[in-house]
Amino acid sequence: MKKLTMTLIAGAVLGASALVSAPASAKMADGVNPWQHCGIGSYVFPDNGVAAAISNVIWDLGTTAVTSATVTPETCNSNLVTTALLIDSSYDQLVMQTAQGSGEHLNAALNLAGCSATAETVGALRNDLNAVVSSAGYADMTHEDKAYSFYSSLEKVSANCGA
Image (cartoon, rainbow, N blue to C red; front, side, top):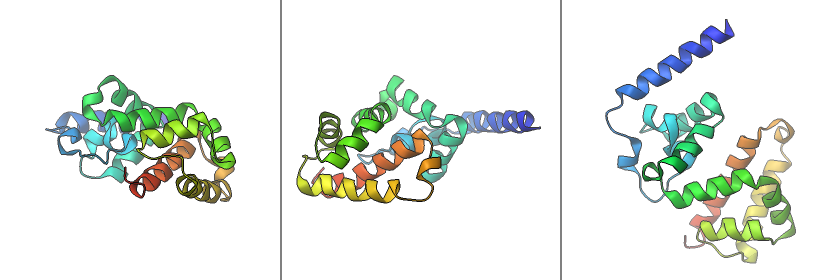
């Protein structure tokens, strides 16, 4: 039964993506989020970033969204995709370095977001990370959810540092 349900969902997603007349990239600006603005989710839900992100995560944990953004960078803002890929591939180092207040991965992520590793920006990231890590559900979060949470925190911090 579960296999049948997944097959029906997959068919619906693929069928709906074929019906979308224009890719979401036609409407994108600087605030591109790879999970919301790339992959299958962005084609099925071009005007609803939350639904696109949920769709991408349900479909394959967001892997296709980030991969499609890498393979076809014209569909997304490549700097933000690079940031997402960095966070995805070095999440553990980013957590450690954010807690410590410095490090190469942390500097790279902040630079990609257009920020400097100042006490204010690192402190803001540390506060968000502390809230996520201390939440009751953190231990049960998937790697993708943790990476997305860090990405969201970085996105919020970059809005306040002139990015």
